[in-house]
Image 1 (tube, one colour):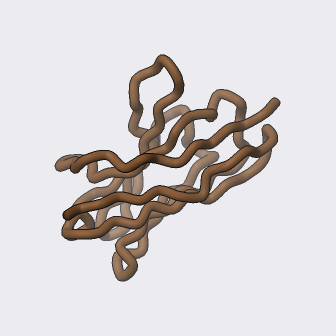
Image 2 (spheres, helix red, strand yellow):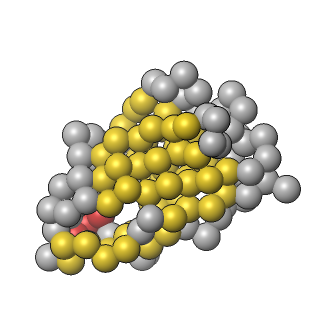
Length: 114
């Protein structure tokens, strides 16, 4: 059974940093582009960043220059390094395959205080 487990969230002041991790079981990592998403209260889930199996990355405008996505294929883990955090980054953060998503994990809460 494929499972996604996100971790690393927490409460941080504006301007601070966090590093999120997502461990995947099953075959989700195999050849798949992986992405980090977030969903704030009352808003739709949005794709923030994606990383291909070979390490190529793309970013949404809202996080470009502040967030860095990476992956460790040997560990079936994808990371999101978040710097210069803003209150508007407050959300639940999720990972999933971009093209062929599986059931969503529980996510990890990130709260940025002003």
